[in-house]
Length: 100
Image (cartoon, rainbow, N blue to C red; front, top):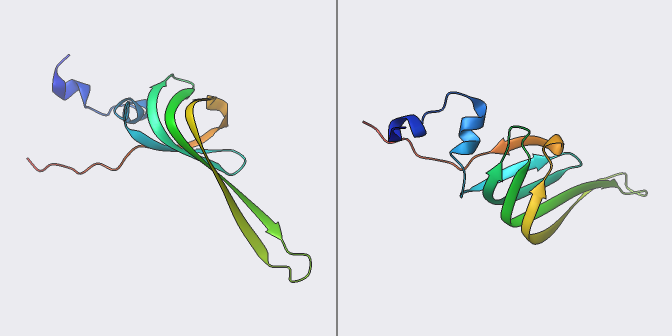
């Protein structure tokens, strides 16, 4: 396989394949977001992430003022197995396009 074929995006999972060993953002159900280094994945979007930062966002309503209170809880995890059925969105790292 040539280098050009290796970097070609033909299917959606090719974007994820090109993000191996790079930091990605994964949005999950239940208002959870993960940012970590992608080590492996499969066709079901099961993933193994390293150096993960998890952000859990919760919205509560103040009983007296009826204002929304948004809380974000963060934690770091060395390695994490992410089950694909909870994945909503996978964002690969930003890349600059080289002009030819």
